[in-house]
Image (tube, rainbow, N blue to C red; front, side, top):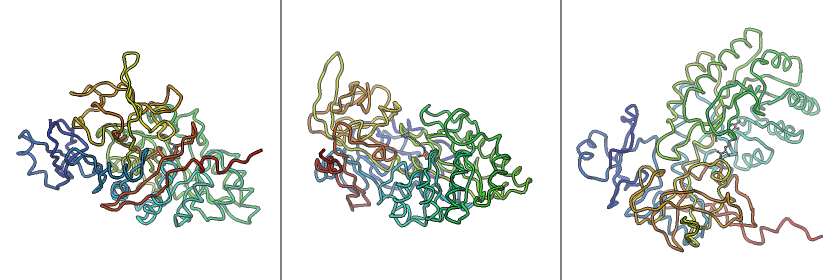
Length: 482
Ligand code: LLP
């Protein structure tokens, strides 16, 4: 069992060994953290042990210890008892680990890492990242307001989005942002007009659509011709000439974002190559283009270890950036926060109807819309399971039954998983939905007049509430009686 975790050879030198006291099986994301070296592992793996080989780049701070789920040094069950459910539980160590992994991977070119606020915009998390040296990618006046509130240095902030209003452009200019990622000629005109009215010169990067298929979900692919994002890459000369002809605009560079999440590095290599070509050509025509921004979209391991580590993306991107002699900006979101949180829920009922087993629990599509919206996969397992978590969550698991894990919302689309192997659970038991840190709370809503979940941030033994659970009063606070 222990060896069934696929560890890529190239990663082995960066591995740690973790042990779990789980009596049955080998949970892939579980273990009593106790560091060892790879060389000591081989003999142990040959024993019927519970050893796990986990590359440090995939470090997981949500661990089963003694058959119970912990976030860092805190029992998840204690958090649920104190703060209620549904509850987003964040691990600060994981957050910082992933940010630092990207920083280290790209260190050679000293990039500006603009954490993509849309993935998770909680102020405390933004503050943690700000203190770690992150900058920010914002797509609205609201996000810019948030990062300012978190203490960000706005001169390193990039502002993307296909529909920036004049008001948002003005806010960006007042905040002295690094650059607007401009998505259309009409937007260039609008930015120029606002800048002129403020007697300013607006820094811009051309968001180019490179027509690269990132092979991700149709709703999250952005770099193919026909998507609403950016401007056709073939038009780069004409667009750069236009910027040059407007005194209130300054061309800083080019921007491309291919989609999200992207589980292979090839699309990035293709984009970086195109970026180098464009920059070289623009410079030969006298344009100043000192920045290449390759957006975000790095993969996340929702299932196991399917996402390449940051170093693999760096390997294909860096040579082109160095050759272009440009500054590099990146906009990672999901890969930083995705596996830094779980969504804890409580089973309300179970029932068997129509030949199916349903577990109805208190987290719903208003808390985590991704399964309903993209059919996305999130690992789900009890917080104190009767069966050790499997290596493969997608197939059948001994001692488990195919279960639809659904929420209370009045839509058939309200599920977190369908036909998923789950051990027996009863009313009141807790479930953990993993990889809930990105596009979870950020996309949550009050649908069915459900107050939004609380969020807590764990660091070692410390726990901080970083967003209170909404109350019934909060639900109606902004409404006025006619
Ligand atoms: N930069 C731009 C221009 C973007 O549009 C996005 C994501 C990012 C950066 C950050 O991508 P990330 O590193 O987080 O993958 N709600 C969907 C994902 C939508 C992504 C939108 N744009 C989901 O839950 O999968």
